[in-house]
Image: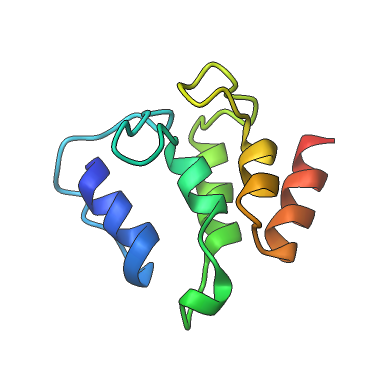
Length: 102
């Protein structure tokens, strides 16, 4: 799945992404999006912005495919939980991340 398809998937309708393009790294740092990784972008998505929000399922998919929870080496120096707290993530996402990290 290409990063552009994944980014569209996260930010718009969360339907199945395009798997025909070149694969991307799940720890890709998007310099155009505050240097966030796909997982960080995912935790910032809001359930009220999408009718069929699948943020937790998307986060789980990314983690299962190697996304780092403690990615404090990114340009913004924030791990995923920091990003979620500072970005006022959904309560469900915060509970999921807290359980996943501990």
